[in-house]
Image 1 (spheres, rainbow, N blue to C red):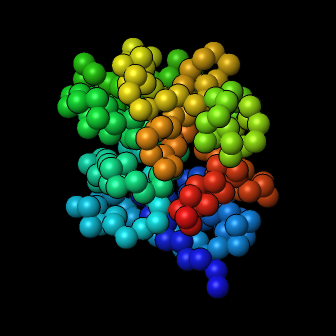
Image 2 (tube, rainbow, N blue to C red):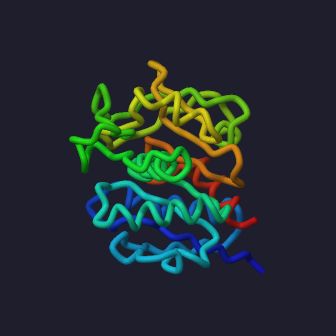
Length: 231
């Protein structure tokens, strides 16, 4: 009998968003690769009021297309996955909010903010990129021995983006001095993926690996995430 894996897709679904079209396809490809039954459920951020809203899932994926209707709801879902050891994947906006949640609740920066929604903040841990990556493809170097490197089975990859914001280099050293580690960087050394070293599976990427599914390729990171959810 095939294992049933329930995955919460945290974000505000929009059929016009390319990543939102790709995610179900990517999960279906992962399910076929692993021979499991993956059942995704979209949960709008405005429907997340407490931890019960996202409990009972085998995995949590915080998806692209932010700002979210309810930032606090997204952060609550991420915190649930982080503290309860639930496999987590964050892509694009999910990457940004995973860093924001970590800054506030682990590093202790209660005033940490996202420049897209609070540009006047003195502690924007997420800030405008030096070069916009809207509908761009770029190369990344994967950290040897990291979960993302093991998933790809290679030290480099090329991935698609649709974003204007990323990790603020001003706060990078402080944020990455705990259990959060940078595990992918672009050719200029800017952070493009992070992982938690003290978590079963917690990976967040600024790029959108799910896009590969729309070209007929099973995204390696999505397969690795689904596999973690099935354990």
